[in-house]
Length: 565
Image (cartoon, rainbow, N blue to C red; front, top):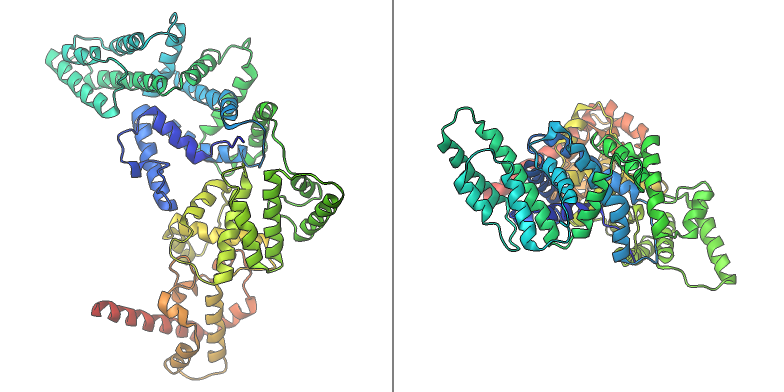
């Protein structure tokens, strides 16, 4: 069964096939299998993308960086719907190449053909593909002829006598494709040749840049040919040469991709693909893909939407009705549910059991969903299922190990929509700025869960509420000094906090920090704070002083322990 590549896989393929990151360390590459944490993934992403841009669009990096930042949201939105199809993986990949990947690449190359981008490798890439298309019998030529083309196209950018560099280019032979490092070393030879000419009228740096870019572009093309992607190259070239040809058979597809490319080049504007314009572009593109993939969708998902409920985070009552109707229908009609139908039914059962506080049972249904992740395209349901996995584990065990769900958090971050977070509390803003992206995403996981299950209200901030309540009880109508109340607070308060010094299970947040941003914290995890308790806590300064004194004593003890060690 065909499952489209996700954003991460697509980018890693682009980086690998282009060869521009070939000599980077494996763990510095996007897509490396051990990038389990979101932070490590993002670090590798930035490293790989910078290498990619540095080599392909060195003079005009902004456009390519903007494109890459928007590409993730575009792909996620396009592939958000779950589906299954009788089309196999190979045929599905070919369909996506014809109607999505090839015209997307052609549209980007077409943009970089403009004269203002001359001097960039990506400019030469488009230019060379067009010249290859015009050359007689190029596509069917032997490796020797392809190498001759590469030599000639690189040497055509040299305007001066450069014997040593020319000798290096003439030495291109066989199936060997030169790496970026080799190209850079050859450019140093070119620089020496140009300096020996001792001609002040020669702009050495401009010539070096032009030849280097053409050299990289030629090697990218030769590498793609050698990696068995000749048919894809030919398709990209066909689209590229016909981009402005209204008589071309697929002219409507190319016009659509030109509009998509323009939007992608604007950068990662907040939820741009959910706007009316963005949604229309996605819809038009889906029509091209659906026509050839013939996807099918589970009836229960369609029925939920028809009933006025969200299909991903359904209304609990409407979901229960649909589940009853579905199984009632099954009593009269015997047929085998498809894999996607079974999987979404397990997702909905997980959701329903969560609503009934049957967390262990809900988790068992999640595990059935998990078993199908690599067998069928789940779209947006994958991230939602992982949100449930994390919170259900926490609801059952009340604990969470450090980095326990790093892999899940990375997947969720790559598949959910962005949200604007508005805040004016300077303490909370500073706290957010010091969070890692993984920690920030964990807060969002609880927020998503609590929005979907307000009746359950998974509360990772329970320790804060307990501390507030105990402080209010001890301080209310009590004239004792904070120093006198502290031993009582220490004795009665949660002993777990003494070990972790954090009120949340997935990152560092002390009680002293939390009292400066209580309303914001609760909103951040999708919960409502008890305003009466908050008022009682804030109206008695002794409550805050008691918590701060408690924290201070714990910190002193920790400091002494560390000194002893």
